Image 1 (tube, rainbow, N blue to C red):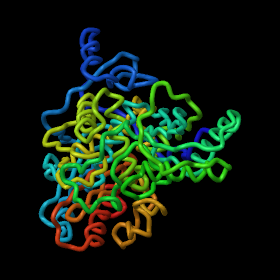
Image 2 (spheres, rainbow, N blue to C red):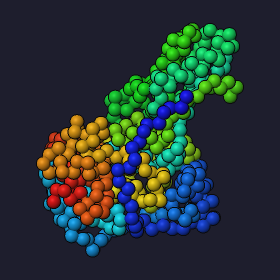
Image 3 (tube, helix red, strand yellow):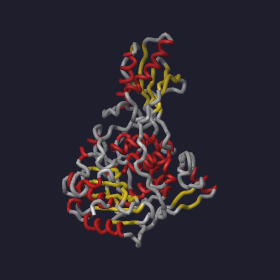
Image 4 (cartoon, one colour):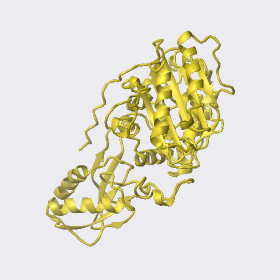
Length: 458
């Protein structure tokens, strides 16, 4: 009854090259043991399933964050043109006066351009880049979330396992298994309960508005079906399960309730989600807030932290620091980027994306790279339905820019990768806060910056 994984197309690009601005520091056996103690599933051990993510030679290494930005005094003519044009275009009045931006060369790791790159601004959904990186690193790209049904004391209990992709069809299949067991035992009626105790009672994150629930994001629970935007997704899922039981001839006694499954309950059936890599791919493509918040909690649990905003963001910081990503001025309070208290510098976002250009991290992180919306790609956050890359300055970059969007009132971000005129991959991040221009005007200006990095808007 496994969920059929989403078919992920092969990467349309494979950036790579030398990477010098994060200098690896070799860990000895004692330091590795300390690292294991630092995280229940540390970045340097089982969390990095498959080939080592920190060293091509299979040895466990970690990296120290830079204390100063890179500079590259030897820019080629193409990069000089990019920098000069960005210097002019970043002062576009549509972007306002509070703009941060960085462009890195993925092959040399040199800084092509930096405009207030260490200034921490509200990043909106660009926060999901940090969340996804931590989830893939700690849980592993092949991880699958499990939803179970157990039986005890005349009750079938649906046990949530943090699967945001669970569907009515999945519950129907589980119900058929349960009905077969009930009928074999001569039972025609049963009570139904839900167990969502994997996560604590939902709360608002620091920086969340109360009216975010349930439209922008549902209260974060361990059980949900069909992504329903309701206040109690767990009871809702239990009701859908009960309906499936009834459709198969079982009488459901009373209302769906909550209970914590007992250790003596008998396992009846379970469902496995698609691989985490497929889930992350979709989350990045459409910027799914609910998936991001669930992944933050599941990442926290796997690393031995509580399934809370605080537990999750603690693990994100730890993972990024071990990759050598700068956390200077970094403040993160949720997994989705809805928090208006989040502050992440453009340089940090660019360094996270730069990890995606390194072959040694291909196994772990490629689903983020492949999930980045492509300029002009329908059904993504850079699709024409959102008015992206459709003006005379940026339309030349359609199909050439791969980037994560971010939009909140008073904050717009765009961070991604594109291949420059010199044939080398560029990593960029642009974040603006507080512009008084319309959202569409700001996005047009920001798309123009990305087209400038590509070089098609010369």
